[in-house]
Length: 494
Ligand code: AMP
Ligand code: MG
Image 1 (cartoon, helix red, strand yellow):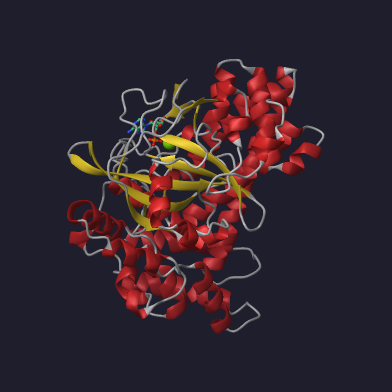
Image 2 (cartoon, rainbow, N blue to C red):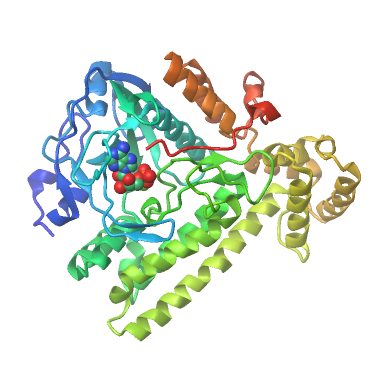
């Protein structure tokens, strides 16, 4: 690693950044400046997040912010970097991917003292761009902004969206589209694929530097474990088990769970063709490029475990110099995933159904409920909300079938020490009324991209900020799509 330089670590520039990833060896990234854009315009600024980050947006002013978040005036010139990484895409290993259209700006310490990393996404070509243009279209930028912020409001670990800037330039996709840049904030952008990059090159020194960086930044307690890198694997397994269970409990479908899109910090990252399920169907798969449903809703826990196996394989030599021993230790760590996942999922389902401490039969009750939703094609979000509020029966084509399940559910609730009203309050705190429904997200994106009208985006953002509250003025956003409004396909937009 580079020798520590007290000068470099002083926060500097308008955003008070310090170098983070840029302190790692030079072969971890390419240093380059963002490509300036023609006519930047600030479309969205996340004031609540800015305040959490300790940024004084009022005194910076709109022109300065626009210049910063468009890449036209990088906050610490000479220190913006494109990170190198690899990844398994749909099961196939690609030894070099990397930030092909993104640049890391540096770190800042948020109000609670936690290091956060800023990235511009859509900032122009880099040495990792391959045939891409290095840019992002407005639609996907707004989709990531909306959905990542909705995930945060739902209480699910995620990267955040600080700003969206229109570039004033167009990008060529299937059609000509307005370009934009997203400013993303993450615990870090280290991916499973970053580890794979060094492992594939047999760069043991690089691998160790990356692992130590990750431990220090995300899993500091692992440093004191007898085997720190095994503890790292344990930690990543635990956070992914919890994360994916949280996705499943709100009906989130990530869409491209390639290893380059899995952050080792445990945050949801890289919102591409992601979407929320409306009617409950385990096979739900929106992504136009996922022809075989590899990353369908129901497959997400399997995909996460598959990725964790790639992670374990990448750091195997760090776990133990004797390969057999390393494999044995890694296998035991990976075996915990399913147990942890199942526990998180079952705990979550009980909460969704208003049930407290676990009793025999709870998992069967939850499974019967989900099967009922599937058979009747009932909206996942509305159904859970109605269990607390009343009116669930009307959602089912077969009311008798619902009635039989409801009887079992009521009998189970009768075993709870609190009255139903108290359980219903808990249910409302875990079952969102408002999720970023695909048809609403697309409507907001369309209005912005094709008519320059940001008001649907602003209104949807506001509705998504408090998802567990039923707010009359946002009632429309709680509604499932009409059959004619249903969106079945989403695109990466890259
Ligand atoms: P993603 O689908 O966004 O996870 O990206 C997968 C890989 O393709 C990453 O290495 C990206 O940096 C790269 N990539 C995606 N879109 C572009 C683009 N427009 N220009 C250059 N590289 C891109
Ligand atoms: Mg990606």
